[in-house]
Image 1 (cartoon, rainbow, N blue to C red):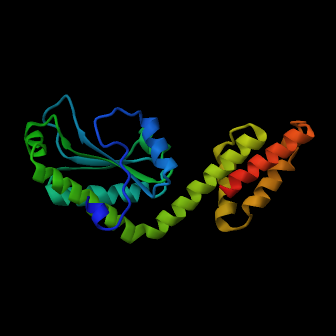
Image 2 (cartoon, helix red, strand yellow; image 1 turned 30 degrees about the vertical axis):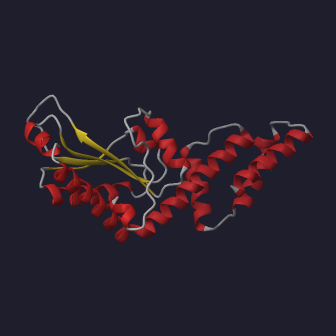
Length: 226
């Protein structure tokens, strides 16, 4: 509601207690071409003394560490919890989302004191305010990084799809990075990239008949248009 009130378009991965897999959640965010993905949680531990707030990001996420840092500091500012830090993690929903993403653990539901606070609607609202303020801080400080990150993510998806559709192989990360750097820098157009792939020896070695050849070219160019 805080984001909507400021003019943002907010898409919830779920609005009831329906169970969704982490892969479904990530695919949902990607298919909606979101700019930012926030996964909101409360923590738990076998040791009831554990307490505080921590926020995670995936190392490959464009802008993830900055987003996590903004959200973590602004949430702690609101609720005064122990700062457990901003940490890199290989969580599925962070790894599979293509936009700037972060996962916040607001407080420990297993800690009696923090559990009691979490039962208070005002306390939960302050967590929401912290997350909101963190998002605003991130956009104010790193808006250009967000735009660049989306370009990189789009280029990565484009390169992978052209390789898969044209050559039926998944390119390694070094290959993806090489082409992405050229596309983002404007050193090569999307059409020229497709032309390079379909005139390569790898493509020729597939020995497609005329109809297959034309269909593969059309399929690749459809990807470029989309």
